[in-house]
Image 1 (cartoon, rainbow, N blue to C red):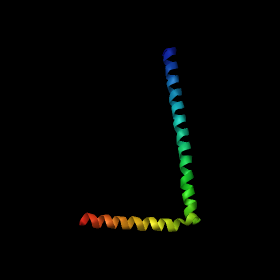
Image 2: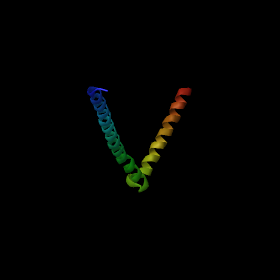
Image 3: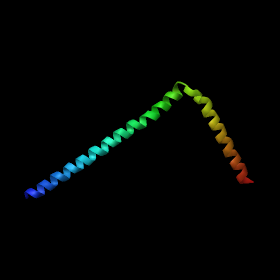
Image 4: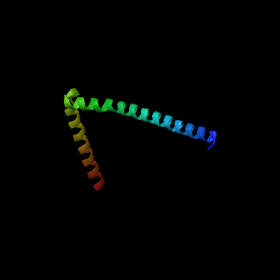
Length: 76
């Protein structure tokens, strides 16, 4: 085995490790940023902040009425 082959193999392994470390760090950052809206939403629902129950109920009723109206119009 020549010296240049060893060096190329070492640099290849080093570049793979460097790419893997960057990918893993991006994954960790993205998961951490994803946690912010998820846990904020859980806190809003759990502690009944912003009258979310009323808002959710209105959204569900309007959505159901819209779907019913669309069904009636499509059948006509």
